[in-house]
Length: 205
Image (cartoon, rainbow, N blue to C red; front, top):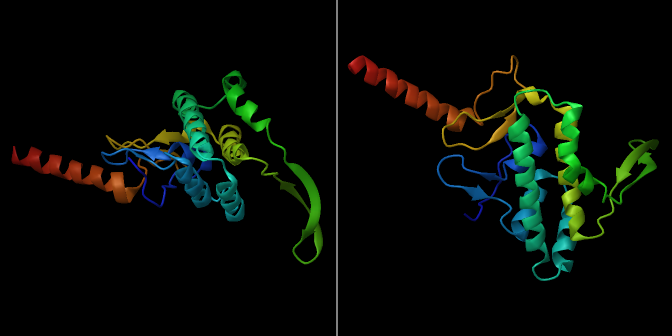
């Protein structure tokens, strides 16, 4: 189904939000990167690529180039989904590294560089700069978000929403790691309503 805007950012992790760029929060599947325009819109909403870069890429792309790139992004997303679903709920170990070769291959294409620069009130700072040399470079910040997920997140607390039809994933950063739902206003409330109806029906029986 063509995606409405805005996209959903409920995961507390950009790497998982990328997986949630296709979702079935209720009963209809929505894909926010089903074409090139969708990919650019999602990158803008995620804050991963500056708007002027996205505009330049859109203006300079060959016909069909961004749609092809969106297809590659979807392939990357589904490969990474398999990895996350296979490992969620327990800590990652170095043994998992061999499964991440496609991610490292993507990151190896980065043509970025580091530099010292003026920051704040004239002090000198250090920053990482990316060269946006081609549409393909738009995948690099997604790769970085995925790399941060696997290197910085405790996979013990990577969870899937418990909504019966929901496909959303999230990192549980709550106290005591008790989060069960993508959103209390969505799946959480539906679960409460179902539980209430069940209790009423049980008492009536």
